[in-house]
Length: 259
Image (cartoon, rainbow, N blue to C red; front, side, top):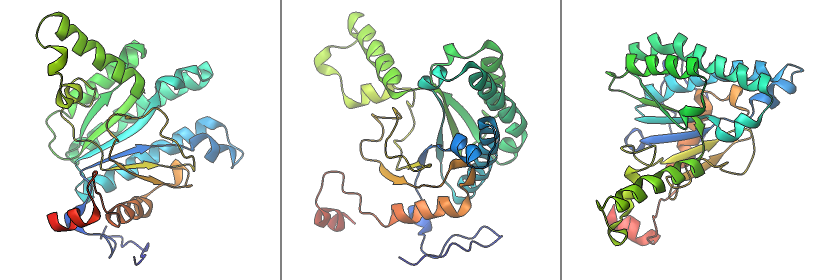
């Protein structure tokens, strides 16, 4: 596969990317903010601030490329266990950044959605995020999904509870539960599963993120810290994705015959 990381200022695609096979849904584990800052002798908060810049950059590129869903692992339920000062700074940063970016999201026809256990969020953060979600609700382009106070085990537990309540109410029998019933009980109900999962920062794990949804998702790992991730990096990941054969349990020959 030819590499051409010199992307034109006009935003042209790399020569090796097929415009007809752009992933519909890309999910990102944005890792490395703290290490990016520490490697420069800065406070960890500086890495989170720079990470917000990367979010804006990648959202703009994803919208331009025609990606329909971009899900960003913004704050996990495990992150609540970090030092209180860092958690407070992150909550303030997330909300302030989203409010600042909302006018641009609207101009670019980007709709925002939040998934996660928002009951744990400070009331000021929840209310301000709700206003941004409402303001972008009429947009019909890219859906930017922020996973805040999210973990997949929490999500699956909540899905089990919803289905259990339906069984208890006699709305469905245990034998009748389908994959679709489970999918519709998840926080991502109505969204397609990710085609591509990107993890920055060099680690090799999925960190309790969309465990049900990524059953057949292609995974792309990069050592690049999230604050340094940009246009060229996203297109590199898409090119790698397009170079793979997605078999979904079939043989390679069956896939080719289906094409």
